[in-house]
Structure formats: structure tokens, C-alpha cells
Image 1 (cartoon, rainbow, N blue to C red):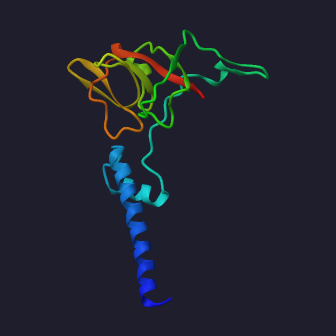
Image 2: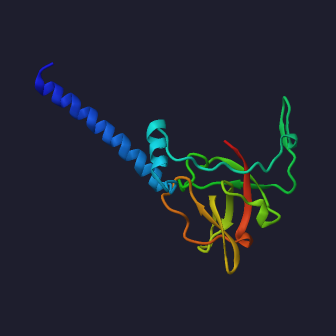
Image 3: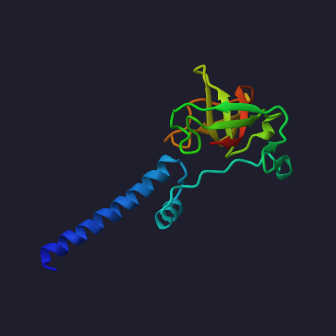
Length: 171
């Protein structure tokens, strides 16, 4: 290889490396998961973005019955849901998927990582993931965010606003 070819070769390697590191940092920052350098380092080294909290187990294994010809989920008062093509919860939820939700009995039934549907102040039903649980002068509220959205929803979700907790997705 001549000198000019080596320069092009190393320029490409440096550009790819800078792009890789920059994308990892951007992904971490846009997912609001990065309070310090260790989060960045973990993402860069693992080739993955910041972890999204998993939902709480709301259905026990003994409530799931799998037979040769059917599956039965023993859930009291299930709520069937379908989804629009908003892309906010891609790739978990998209148009054509079906969901099963349960109605929470109390604020204690909702945990960080749960995917909830709620009545938005804009008048629609939104289904996003709980990323924080906080308290103010009015009581407990939930901070939610679409997995594919760069920022949190711009409202405090109160227990009275919650329609259900997603416990199953059928594609």
C-alpha cells in the first residue's frame, strides 16, 4: 500500500470509530439514562444503548395455561387493546399487534418499567412506559415516555388517569 492509500484507510477507520462513539453517546443521552461516564462506557463497549426497565410481573406462571389447541390466561377483567402507528413504542408495539391489559387496583400496582395506557390531557389514550414515580402536593404521579421518543411525555400521570397495565402483546 502506498502512503495515500494508508491515509484513506486510516481516515475511514477513524470516521467509523468516531461515528460509533458519537451514536452510542447520543443514544444514551436521548434515552435519559446517563448520569455519568460509566453509562457511556458500558454502551460503547457493549455496542448497545442504555437499558430500558422491564415491566413488573403481573401475571404469575400458574395463571398461564398452554394446551395443544389453545392458550388460556387466567386474568380477571382483562382489557383488550390495539395500537396505532405512532412509532412511539416501536418495536414493542405497532399497528396490527393486540394487547391485553389489567386494571390496577391501587397506585402500588404500578412500577417503573410497566407499560401503561392512560387518558391524556389531549383527549386520547396513550400507551407508554413508566420511567419514574414521584410525589408532589397532589400525591403520586408517574412520568412516562415512549420507548422510541427522545423525551418524556409532558404531563404528570395520576392514578385516576390510568386505564390499564399492559401484561401481554400478541403479534
